Image (cartoon, rainbow, N blue to C red; front, side, top):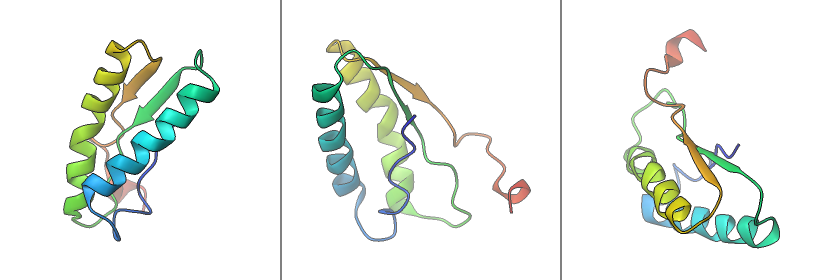
Length: 88
């Protein structure tokens, strides 16, 4: 399960975070082509972050595109309906 991008959200744009994710996915798929990679949306951080919101909106499409190309990826939404107030 990859829940990745949180640390970059305050420093980089969504495009940079997405590019880094794609680089990592390329390496994971090359190293373990039969592994199932589950990619998660980032949970709410407790503050509004546009880069993270934009990045989150791209994750399902990244998974869909790569899965259609034969890679073993699945998507999990850990953002929608997540109540960050109950975790703090």
